[in-house]
Length: 381
Image (cartoon, rainbow, N blue to C red; front, side, top):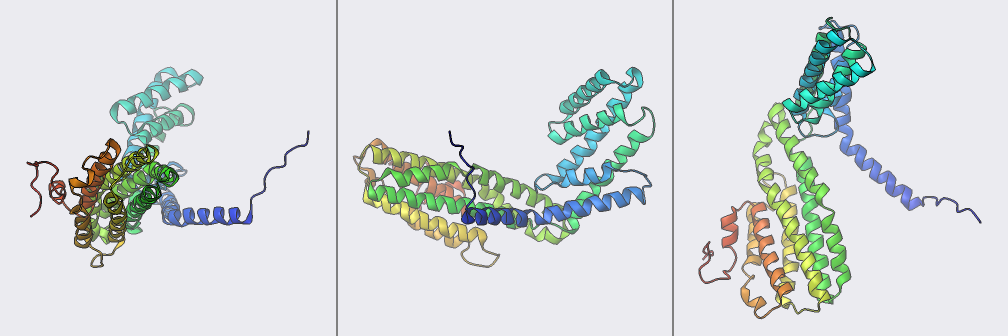
């Protein structure tokens, strides 16, 4: 039987991989620089002013506290120092009584990590407690000054990491708004694919839209992480104290963006059922989906706009209101279940997007024509 030779990558595939690698490297370049500087400075501080001969824990602590992720760096630093303290304290106490050996190491690690988990749920806390307990059981003589030195090294590394973030900060808004814009771009593309499938009565574009919509959770998680990291940087670094209002607006928009993507998924799924069942949808509703995709593009541009640039929240809200005014219940008069659900999802999606544009939920609901005689929130006049 002839052997099958491995498939060689094409030139286009190699270029695509190189572009992907280049994008990853560019996005991580500043965090890598921060980690490198923090490690070198932490070693210098621990060997110079502090006076430790081999403070290997200081650069380790600096790198762990920073990492490549921008979120929760302060928490990582605190967890790291506390984890080292718990691990060394528990390890030193137990090893002093039972000595060192294989079963002693296992017992010390279990007790140190158990204590850390009971005190705090942070993963770095428990991992550093376990690591430090191993150091005590294997390298640091019980009762000596080594345990205290490791605690000081961890504290030096954590503080240096925070100082590097304050002096050479990542822009607190740029990454968060880029991720938010990516999610909105996906939402617009999904809506356009759904509209194409409805116009052509073809399930294939809608199936592709549904797959695209279901793959957005990582981007939403990245958006939330970057918003959290941006808040931290805006507190630590005086260079970006003025970015707090923009971060507050992005924070307020995070849940509505997430909800909008969820409603877009439901809209795509129900539209797929509608086409497969050959159910009739009012052409006016199909136009609303296309108009909504255009409105999402305006929202995306709003998120990426610098302060004072257009479109702003008022412009995005104006475009969305023009779509909302047309969402009248006569478009589903006598319609089937799927058409009614599509109508309801479009209305829900408009409410989410208006909140991204800065409206409160009640005000967003009030932009829609009423579907009952006595609505809970009276419509705008």
